[in-house]
Image 1: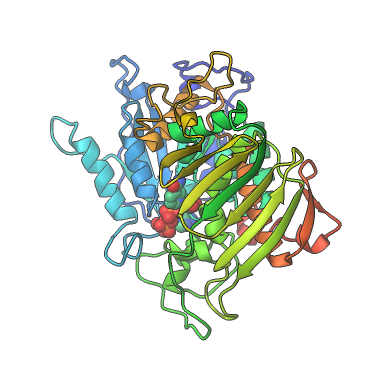
Image 2: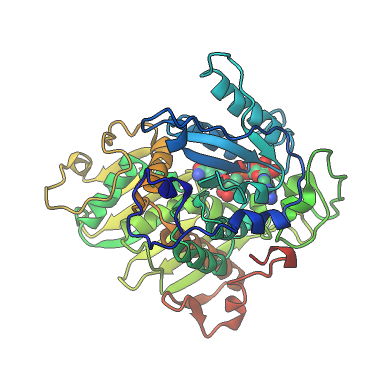
Amino acid sequence: MLNRLQRQSHFPAKGLSKQKASSNTRREFLKTVTTTAVVSSMPLIVPRSVFGANAPSNRINVGVIGLGTRGLPDMKLFLENKDVQVRAICDVNRASNGYRDETTVMGLTPALKVANEHYAARQRSGTYQGVDATGDFREIIGRDDIDAVAIVTPDHWHAVMTIMAAKAGKDIFCQKPLTLTIQDGQEMIRAVRKQQRILQTGSQWRSNARVRFACELVRNGYIGQLKTIRTTIALNNKQGPGPGWQPMPVPEGFDYPMWLGPAPQASYHKDRCIYKYRFLLDYSGGQITNIGGHAIDIAQLGNNTERTGPIEVEGMEATWPPRGSLFTTALTSKFRALYANGVELICESIPPYFSIRFEGTEGWVEFANRELKTSPESLASVELKPDDFRLPAPNPTRTIANPGHFYADHIRNFLDCVKSREEPIEPVEVGHRSASICHLGNIALKRMKRLEWDPQAERFVGDETANSMLSRPRRTDWNA
Ligand SMILES: NC(=O)c1ccc[n+]([C@@H]2O[C@H](COP(=O)([O-])OP(=O)(O)OC[C@H]3O[C@@H](n4cnc5c(N)ncnc54)[C@H](O)[C@@H]3O)[C@@H](O)[C@H]2O)c1
C-alpha cells in the first residue's frame, strides 16, 4: 500500500509493489467510528503554490495516540521536525494529574494546547487552532490525510492499534515494549509486512552513540569471545494498594472502557491506569518489560541475536505482591537465558536503574547510568578499523563523547524511513524479539523452572502451561 506522500510522488516508493491504496480505507473505518470528544477541527488546506521539502503538501502528517508520561514529550519531539505536521492527537483522558507525580497534569487538553501553541508561534497572526483532538483513535487511523501514527499508549493497546493502523496504510512509531504477548508480536509483524509499512520500535537507547559503540566493541571481538550479558532493571518505583482495595468512581473526562479496550473487564482504581498500569500483568510486564524494553533490547543488539531468541530460559528468584493486591507483576526478579551461541543473559532487579554489561574472554564493556566503562580501560578509546562491523547510526554526527539528543535522533530515523522506505533502526521483527525475551522471563518466573525454548517455532518444548502464556484473549470488540 502506498502512503499519501508516495501517492503524491514526493517520495520514492522503494521496494514497494505498485498496489494502489484502497479508496475504501476511510469509509470502512468511519463505519466503526464513534464520534466522541472532537475538541477542534479545521479543514485541510494545502497551499499547492508553496514548493520545497517542508512545504505543507510535502510534510509527514502525524497523529499521536496517547499523551501521557511519554506521549507528551514524544509529541514535542515530532513537532520539532519541520517536515512534520501533527494533525491530530488522541487520548481517552481529557486531563488529569497522576502521571509523573500528583501535580503533573497531562492528557488530551494540555497536549492540544502545546501543539496549537507550537504552530501559533510560527503564524503571522500568532494564532492556530488546526490540531484536531479526539478520544477515539479510530478517527485518526481512519483519516486519509494522516501518513503516520505514534502509539504511546499502555502496552495492552500496542498490537490492536498497530494492526489497525497498518491495515489503514499508516506508518507506525510504536513505543517499547512493542508487545504485551509473543502472539501480539507475530500478528504485528504479519500486518506490518503485508501492508508494507514502516514500523519503528520506541527503544531509543539503541540510538545512543555510547550504546552503539559498546555493541560494536562486542560484535567486533574487542572483548574476546562474548560469554555473559548482565542486565539490571530497576526495582518497582510505585506502590499499589494491597489486599482489600476498593474500586473508585471513574473520574469525569476519563473514558475508562476505552482505556481497558482489549484487556479483561475490571473495576476502576486510579492506580490501575495512569503510569502504574506497568505493574499489572493484564496491561504490561512490570520492570522486566518496562526497563527490559531497553536493557534486553541492547543485549540483543550486542549479541547479534536481534531476529532470534534464546534456547533456554529459567526463573531464578521472584517475590510477588500479596494475593489480592492490585499490582500483580513481580516485586523483585532474577532470570537467566541461554542462547545457541553459548552466551548467557542474566537479568536482575537490582540497582542501577538500568545497566548492561557484556563480559568476554578478554575484557568487558558496560553501559550504566548513561556512562560507558570498559576493561581494559583502553577499550573505551579504541578506534574501530575501517573494515570493522558498524551498526547503523540515526545521526552520524553523534559521538561517544557527545551522544546528543539520541531520542530525537531515533524519531528522526523513523521520519527519514517514512520518506525513503528503508528499514528503521528497530523494525517490527527486532522490537518483537526484544519484547519476547522479557515475556519469556516473566513466564519463567511463573514456572520457576528451566524451560526449553524453540526460537524458530516460538514455542516452549514440552511445557504446555508455559505455552498457554504466549497469548491472551482480547475482548471481542478488539480482535484486530
Ligand atoms: N521509550 C521510553 O523511554 C519510554 C518511557 C516511558 C514510557 N514508554 C512507553 O510509552 C507507553 C506509555 O507509557 P506512559 O508512561 O506514557 O503511560 P501513561 O499512563 O503515563 O500514558 C499513557 C496515555 O495513554 C492514554 N491511553 C490509554 N488508552 C488509550 C486509548 N485507547 N486511546 C488513546 N489514549 C489512550 C492514557 O490515558 C494515558 O494518557 C508505554 O508503552 C511505555 O512503556 C517509553
